Length: 212
View 1 (tube, rainbow, N blue to C red):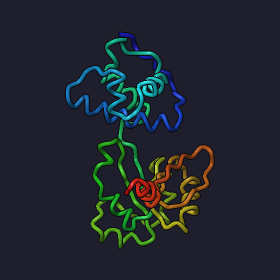
View 2: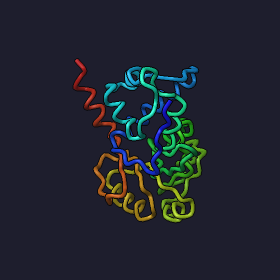
View 3: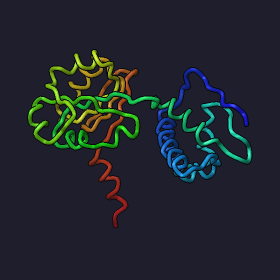
């Protein structure tokens, strides 16, 4: 079996990174079921992509695997995990702990995927604590100090739309490099910051087209 080439830093397109996350989840299931090798066709089918697309995405890691046998599941999972930065729990903060924010704070699935929500920030932290949230909730005035002292790079944004741009400006200035945005607005950030938007109403609108 050929050994994978492991570059110091792989420059992978954003859409490919999203698919790598899906491949990683599929590989985790294979490992749990005791599967040691998987073909590109089988993994692509499980991930919902074409085999050619999967092979193109995995080619960012170099050439490895055995023709006719497929990819070693544990090696591939390790490579993707390291690329996605999941060797250890990544700290995340949440800003805007209202109804949606509080629901996310009570969600226990983040750690299983390699992320730890270490703190939340809100204009009225006492009301959030009353919702049964166990994660520390601080006044939003503490935001910059916390990010700087805890070296946090990821944030979840759940603030009302009229405050979203001002808050993301503060996050970027404090050192945040990635934002998962639940506010229904396109945020303006510097090129070195990545924003993923989650517009629930837009997703429902998309689904409604297929309802007859």
